Length: 235
Image (cartoon, rainbow, N blue to C red; front, side):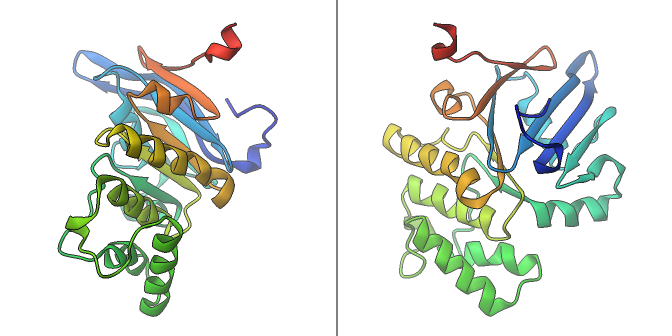
């Protein structure tokens, strides 16, 4: 369902009736999910519940048995592989648990590379990368990527995810490898992005303290995405 009071045209992600099966198990069973621009959603669930499968479907890297996935107004389940890849590059930013930066490249080169692969002019790509790293508090030059702190690496990964100005930002356990201080800092940064960048944010996490920062918290249980009541709402 769409977030309350959000017009359908503001949705950057609308997944309907998703079904995904593996032998002997159904991981997604008519699952429904919507994320609007300026809105954040967190998905929790036990290991093996299908959270990674959900992300793979949203990225167009796994094909659901049935259902639709509209991202930035287009249903990727109806696209050929090449068009899905281009649509993903142009409309989705991805933040991984371990940042997945290339240590042989500098921080600015890591971020600029994503823009260059999207066809952006080299000068513009590096200018934008430096601006983002500066805004997010990461040294763009003079520091090797391997020498960044855990928090700085995740912030650089966020900059890389934002460089192409995606409609939808996905984050897979983005604080799972961080200590408490960096977890809170990166969590605060991530959940500030929807309003600052007018994008949608979907965070998959085991950490309920991180999930509690989202506008909407869902739990993946028996293939369904179910709303989690906040403690404040329960009292």
